[in-house]
Length: 227
Image (tube, rainbow, N blue to C red):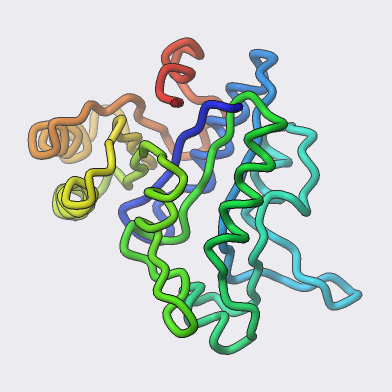
């Protein structure tokens, strides 16, 4: 069985997929048999044959260099760029928890380290019609700890604090925070990091600058985040 970690974000477009790709790239560069998984993915383009391209999974695969087949990375893919619960209402094929877990366990049996990325922020509803499924349900069902991705800029103290508090209310362990779009020497960014550490009691384990191609974390420390 693999060691696993869940990647959540403080919201949409904070760089969750970008940082996830760098995490898996770091593992791959150190000869670790790593895999990616995302339960539901919205906002995807279509191929010429009409099939949907799992955009986030394709990005992670290309950046990280992993050989994992694209078609096993995400069981539920939608075209509309909305929350998965609404996308499935518009397009059909609502998320089923047992299928998400089955696919996740299959991947865990074949890889050393599995990184599961969430959809949007921690409150994102995954299904809300046939079943009521939130990201927290998936995290708890798969017994995962979390790493939080946040933008380093204005508003992040509130976003990080609320996300951490919500996770704590569900007894979801927070392993640390990675700040994206960090500008060294930017007084606000540097203060945001310190304030978020104080409010959450969790450490900033990395600060990623715009355009970084590698994650500045020792691989041994990165491995220790997985359980």
